[in-house]
Structure formats: C-alpha cells, structure tokens
Length: 352
Image 1 (cartoon, helix red, strand yellow):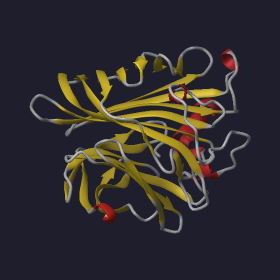
Image 2 (cartoon, rainbow, N blue to C red):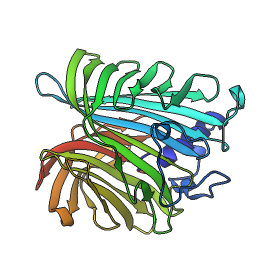
Image 3 (cartoon, rainbow, N blue to C red):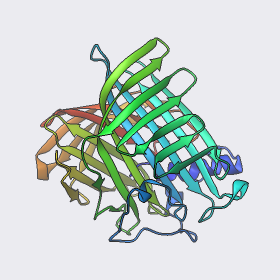
Image 4 (spheres, helix red, strand yellow):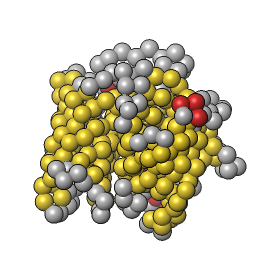
C-alpha cells in the first residue's frame, strides 16, 4: 500500500511552505473526506497501457520501485526510486494552473550506509510527469523510461550517489486485493493497487567509494486513491518478499490508535498466480528495535502466514536505513530466514 500520507503531507510542505511539525500528527489526515476527488470502487476495470499513466481525478498516486541487488563480491545493496503525484484539486490545468504536485525520493542502501535524496516539482510546466505510451516517468533528470513498462531504464542522482539501471519484466502484473481493489480498513477505505514484482535489474551504482556493477531483482508498485486510510490509523509496516523457491509475498499491517492492526496481503506464485490474504492472515510481530533518528524503529520482525506455512524472521541489511526526507520514514532491504529464505524490502511509517 505504501505511500498514501507521504504524498499528501509532502504536497502540503511544498505548497504551503509550512514545517512538517505543524502538520496534523501521525497519519490520520489521510482518513479525511475525499473532498470531491474520485474514490476507488469495487470491481475495477484496468486498461493498459493507459493505467500505467497518471489519474489526476484521484488525490494521490505513485510509481514506487525497490530493488535487491548484489555486487561482484556478493555484497548486498538496496535501491529505491519513487515518483509521487498529489493533487490540490481534481483534474488537470495548463501551466502553473495545474493542481498537481510532483515529488520524488531516491536511495541506495549498503550494509554500512544509507544515501537518500528528494526532488519537488509543480505539474503543468514540464518539470515532472508520467506518460503511458511510450512509458516515461520523470522529475528533472531522474527518469524511468522505455517503449513499454516491461523494459525500462532507471536513473537518479543525489549529492553523493547515483545509479543507472535497466529493468526487464520476466513475469505478469499482479493485482492486489479483489482484482486490484485493495481495502485498507474495516471501514472500507481502499485504493487501486497492482505491482510488477518480476523485474530483473542490472546496472551500476556510483557511491562515494566508487562505481559498483550490480544485478538483482526489483519490484514496482502502482497505486492511486483519494481516501486510503481510516481516521484511527497512524502508520504502517509493509513487506515485499521474494523467496528462494520462487514464491513472493506482499503483506502490510496498518497500526490503529487502540493498539490493534488491520492487515492484508497477496500470495504470489512463481507464475504470477495470486491469492488475496484477508485481515489476520498476515501476522507481523517486532522482535528487535533500533534507535534511528531519535526514534525506536523495529528492524527485525517475525512474519507469519500460517495458511502457507510461513514463519520467518525478516531483518534489515542496514538498520539505519532512514529516509531523511521532508516527511521521514524507514525504508530498506531485508533478508529473510526461517521456514522460507529470501530477501525483500521493508517500509515503516508513523514512527514519530
């Protein structure tokens, strides 16, 4: 599910120029009324390649890619590239009349360091945007682009890092929830949500210590909505895991003010066949916390999916993978051990 309130709060930062501390506490703001924006409905009818592009009648949207990489000596690395769209009002407009706000995050994680960067743009002036065919998502010189979304190049540059990658899909798109209609709360808040979890990725990372050729796998999430969280939800823990036997798991829990959680997920077979996991079928329990940026953040978890015999530990490659962005959060690569072995990515928000 990932980045719902990051988009809304960052848009406020950009447009109102107010400090993050002055915004509503936690993530409850995304439980507010949809305010004239379109709202996801059950039984979605996706159309491609059009739906790889933007949906300006919805308030929030993102193109969110994470990758697990290995260097020539086996060193593990993580890569993140995310483009967010957040609207001040439904629809589009010419030039500076566009109500669309764009921003992006990029990061590289190593066992010793975590490097991140952030970009902002206003819609309508060509500085940022997405086209569906040929596919291109960009902000300034950061780009994900190709004739189709099945074969793209990916670039980003920060103050002390950059990367230049190529991604090729080796499996089908995956639709979460009920055919891409992903429910986020008992009250029925939802988003449209699909992924491409079968990317093969290769290229090079440029780090302060030099250039590193890397290969690995990548996972792209596509999601849009207008009111994705309930008022009593404060943040989430999101896992995307690729097991060595070819199965994959997307699972998340939304933490609620009364101490309970709402969970959901998708079990993905090697051929892309899926089964939706309902509330309670994914059980995530923190095992160890790390003091990161003045916060206690769980960086080692026990994750269970009893229906598939999954009982694993999920541990951060680098516990300090904190995104020092306008709205901070934790995002980084993880290693999986226990009943299943593998690797993946973990995102955690709302630890303030």
